[in-house]
Image 1 (cartoon, helix red, strand yellow):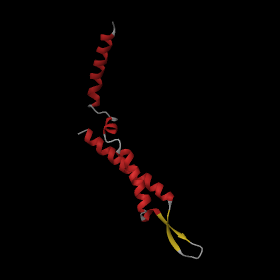
Image 2 (cartoon, one colour):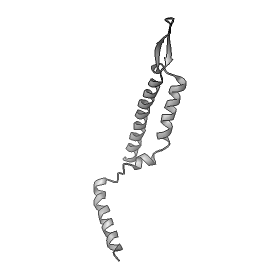
Image 3 (cartoon, rainbow, N blue to C red):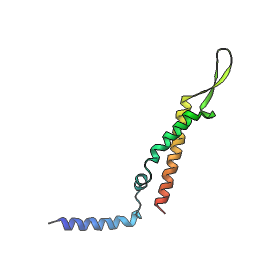
Image 4 (spheres, rainbow, N blue to C red):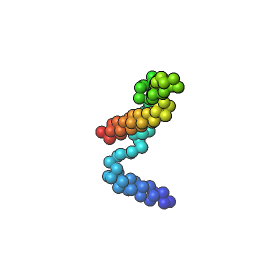
Length: 102
């Protein structure tokens, strides 16, 4: 018997909240945007760093005979991977958030 009263209160509260929210749902952009991009981008960055081995992930290694060679530093790969992936993911999220609010 109280269902119409509860439904009426819900509709009234939705109307009151709607004027403050401007129709923005902050989580909508994260889930509606290509969710796979948030997973694929870090994997692509990691593969790029592992297979291409850019110079910024290498360090000098001095051998016993005094020769210096450039070897891959896995610590630098992990740090670079995290930083580059975060920047790209935040960029994708910001782009999708901007698209959702236009």
